[in-house]
Length: 510
Image 1 (cartoon, rainbow, N blue to C red):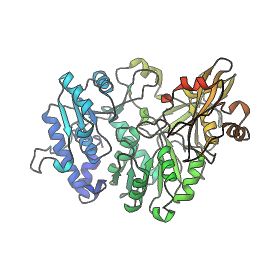
Image 2: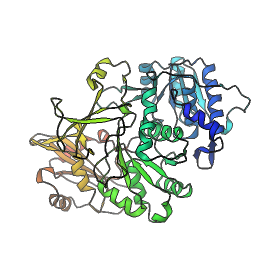
Image 3: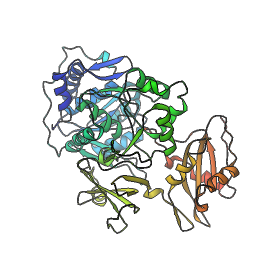
Image 4: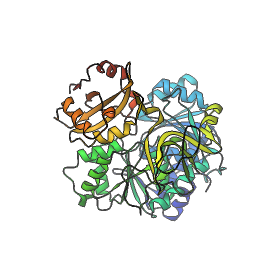
């Protein structure tokens, strides 16, 4: 299986009438999906796209994304996917950095991309609902282009928290290795019914969910944008067996699940979570309400979202993301690069079949992050004697208060158990005396009132004194990225610094 579209192409011959993709009442079966992909491929080829050419795709999680994505793979293009909310400046940067030769965008998300294409004189394709696609007699390709394993399949740009975004190059082999690793780990059957509201332009939704589902003949139910009640209804009404999301999604479902019971989700066997650490309190509450445990995995853009997943046979271990997937190796290393023993804390290093080939046109960054086939993740963790990985925090998120190391996730885990707290982010704020002070930005349950002195007293019963947040800031909602992950870098640290002298909790107006 070289070209990523190969399994889907074969599936159209084997089970043409099986549902492949659905979005509410909009349904594409494997036979029809392949026909539309073939017509899409011919359309792109007619614009001069050749194997290896970089093409930018801007579209939400809808069937048209699937058609365009695999249409581009069919003719051997290298695909770059970006957030549908990207600005003209952001898109222009990616186009310039990657050497994009064609821009493709969903008509409702096309304005910024169209402007970039016009300014740069690039061909532009506006995607419309598949029902409006050309008729069945429109030109189509007869077969997909063969690819080599080392060819670049996709370039996914990182968030750029430490500088300009870098494009992680995932090869054909990288992309195809993900479903191979996940099939035994998730015990995937031939007709799994998947559902997600994750963005397909992100590696979690694109590779771990979409490519996994369609490689093994499953059906993929898409929801865009995420809405907790609608997502729960999809899981119930479409008899979903595997649902995939991030912590904020599961949390939102819990907050809106009063009208549901575990009987509504009897077909749901896996709730797969990734993208950020999962609060243990949410895992426990979800299992009680939905009758299905949330199982965590771990991966990065640089590993196609793939590295570990919870062992389905193992005892539940809240706070761990499971052992390495088949074909992967994990080491915890100290600052000198020496592997550490079980339960010792250090930086996580990964080796495996999905580890990127490097950053696009960034030889220095590639050399820094890839050493002898090992990826330096920048994440801090520990591995227990069973080989289960525990993510402690990002190395860059570590707070050093008065010489003491404080891992934000540990503090967040405790605060999530408070009955009035729905979401929380703990960050370090510069402080003249301690170097850094601990700040907690919190979203409360509706109508809850926070007494910050009482909260600190409550926290002191559960945390060492130096770990208790001195700054408490209450907001209506925390900033989130496209996947629903809380964006700590978007929190205004200057305003929190102003609070450091008083430690006052502020309730923003609704």
